[in-house]
Length: 320
Image (cartoon, rainbow, N blue to C red):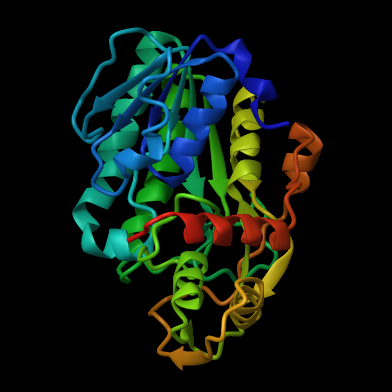
């Protein structure tokens, strides 16, 4: 169901379109006949993610920091706001930039959508739930976040972005939607971005030990990027306000994930254990009842297949 939702839009603005998820979203929109303006400052996104798109008809690249007011040459009818550092390595390295992308960046993207009469979609995150005390997490849960911990620059930026999007819709009538993305993975991830899937794959392919944090019993729920993009477009097309969880409810431990990647990569790597990061969530699993019911969306790519595709991509591409 990936790109079947896109043709209703003539022109989409994708902030963070040079990033991992953003570049896949740009591709899906273009494939469906929607013109795309990709807005990115490449602080964490990579030009090679969109290198195959730059010469395509209908694609425009605008190198801009969304934390400063910006405009585009042609009014969009949808603005999809994904611009933000999203991996631990990035938001710990760029804490102020992350907070600005979630606050000023969200406001500037909202104002672009409002003055254009466009639909607005905020790509929020499961990190708004923090280290959750409810499991699985549904959209009515308010979360359990440390506002001054090392992860707070990302968690609270996204929580503020949700509050700002809600206020903009309520006060000004902006047609806005919030999607909460859970642990998306797939091709174009960076090997050193600090997230488990690319870290384990990079280590397995190099034959070095896989570094599992803590005892490895903390869980995540992995959603292949193709499914995440389909969910974003389904929510955008539906007209709902959200928030709505987009993720795969098949939960697994980090130790299980590491062992699985070693096997799928045909690696001889061993598994070692390192210190677990501060405020690292113990569990993470989406309740996707709302997405199933309202959007008729659920993940289609099984974890084994998605990991095989991702490992194959890492084998074929240089990564950093």
